[in-house]
Image 1 (cartoon, rainbow, N blue to C red):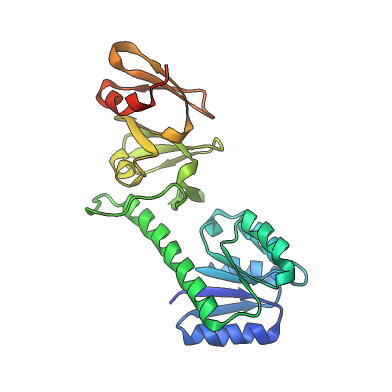
Image 2: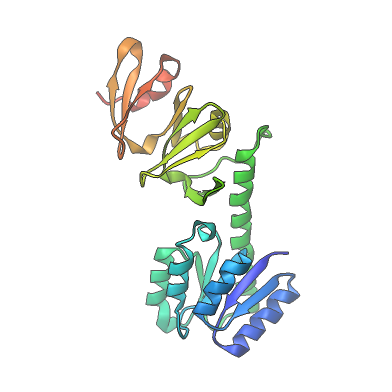
Length: 256
């Protein structure tokens, strides 16, 4: 049963949402203000959060800001409840990580459809990560997109990583080092063939048996020894050698 956290200072609306969502087989937790909502979210780790914008002590914007500091909430769907007069605040919330908004007053079917759609996408993200982590990948599994996020648990820290933020990946035996555009480096136990089987092929290219790069981050390509190439990526001082085995795949990107 999916856990939904409702953060709403209006008692009547909070109770109405609880009754509606429990009737539709969701497990509901509720908080009457932003501070209580943040504390409860960290305790129960909900699958989805519904939050009012204007609340005492901590606004909906503040709730998003606080929770998005923790990577464990990076992919958790967040739906704003907003009055028409609060649309400017809603846009700020969307910019910092909220996924959707519903204008008050709203119909039951409107919020139920929004919840279903957001939970379905969240499940797809988590399922993609489970497939990516598996040693034996099934055939015909969907490729991740540039906007999808994957969950990585390194024992010491948990990360929700946007696929498009991966700069390059290097193999380290049974492990791989994932380098992000913000200069973060993450070491995880995952084989290159597993990455290659799920990363979007239009964006990511294996240029060496031990290296996968993000094509959208290419800054410069040069000819190198015996029909191979050197590639420079934006945000990295390292130059990558494209081995002869993979050189044909980079020719369309050759620029000098």
